[in-house]
Image (cartoon, rainbow, N blue to C red; front, side):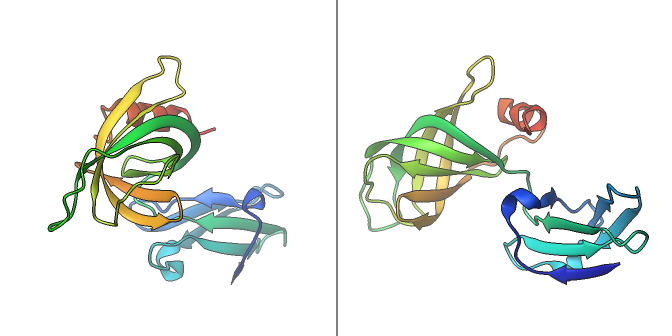
Length: 178
């Protein structure tokens, strides 16, 4: 098996997540050969690694992206809102409100776009509320810590973390991976 790291179009890549032992499995759809790869040797801190793999049995080219996130992240387009709750020490901002569009969600956090400007910095705490697009239109209301801000796109971590087994969000992510 020959492995090349490189850049590929997102739609061409199969997303792989390492198992508890740090390995990923990729199936060749041409011949059915199973490739087991030690993902740890390709890990880049906080990033996905794109691979181009040549099947050593039939020579077919396979492409994959190994994600090193702790939890599956689902792309979404959900509506909601956020309100500033607590600011970092020596900052007294609270109560600012904005509508949001949740662009992605996982058990550990969300990525969202704010519809109106907020005076928020990385490390600030927000209350977020959004509706899932499940049949019940489940409302998720959670506190988050802002981890990154790029223009009007916020990356935030749930605090405390979501329950990986019993929460409505866990159910949504488990059964709505389309």
